[in-house]
Image 1 (cartoon, one colour):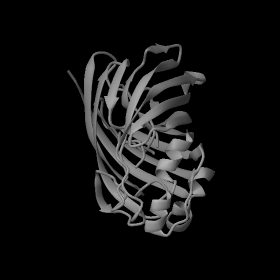
Image 2 (cartoon, helix red, strand yellow; image 1 turned 90 degrees about the vertical axis):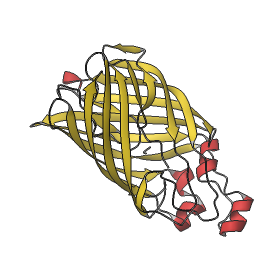
Image 3 (cartoon, one colour; image 1 turned 120 degrees about the vertical axis):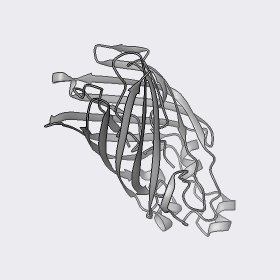
Length: 282
C-alpha cells in the first residue's frame, strides 16, 4: 500500500479561518480535516472512506475507512499518519523547508494489505509474499507563489528502511482557488524511486516466479507513477470541514513492465474519497 500521507495522493487542508489552503503529503490521505490554528497546539480528528486500488497497480478496487489524527504546533510542527512527522524549519517568504518522516504500510498477498480495509480486496498477489511496513526519513522543500500564493510546488526525498530500503522522491504542484465557500485545488504529481524500491514492489524473484508462474523480473529505478490530483474543501464552520478528493495516475515504465502488472494488474489507477475532520485547540 502507498504511503498514507500513500498515494498514493495529495490533499488540500484549510486553515481555521478558511481563507488559505495548502497541499500536503502524498497519497489520497485522510484529511477532510480542519487544519491547525494559527498558533499553539491543536488536534484534529476525522475519518475518510476511500475507494481505490487494492494495491498499487491492482485492477481490483477496495473500500477502506481511514482514521485521521493530527497534532500541530501552529504552522511549525505537524504529525499525522497521512502527512508524517515534520518540522517547518524554514517558513518564510512562501518557502517551507524541513525534515520529514513517514510510514508506508506493507502489502499483504491475501488481500492487498490495507490495515483499514472494509470491503473488496485482491487475490492477485497470491504467491508474491508479504511486504512489511516501512519507515521513510528525509526532507521536503515547498514554495508558494503567484497572486495570493495560489500556486504551490513541493518536493520530498525520503530513504526507506524496514519493508524496503529504496529512495522515494515525490514531486507535485497545485493551483488553488475559492468558489463560493469552497476551496478547490488541482495539480500534477510524479513519484520517482530507486531500483531497490521497484524490485521490492514490482520485481519478481526466481522463487516468486516458481510460486506464481510469472516470469522473473528485475527492474531498475525510474518513474513510479505520474498523474493528476484534485480536491474540494468545504468548511462547515471554523473548526470542521469536508474534503472530496480524487486522483488519476499512471504507472511508469519500470513498474508497468512488471509481469505482475501486465498479467494481474493495470497501469491506470484511480482513487476517490470523502473526508471529515474536526479541530480543537489545547
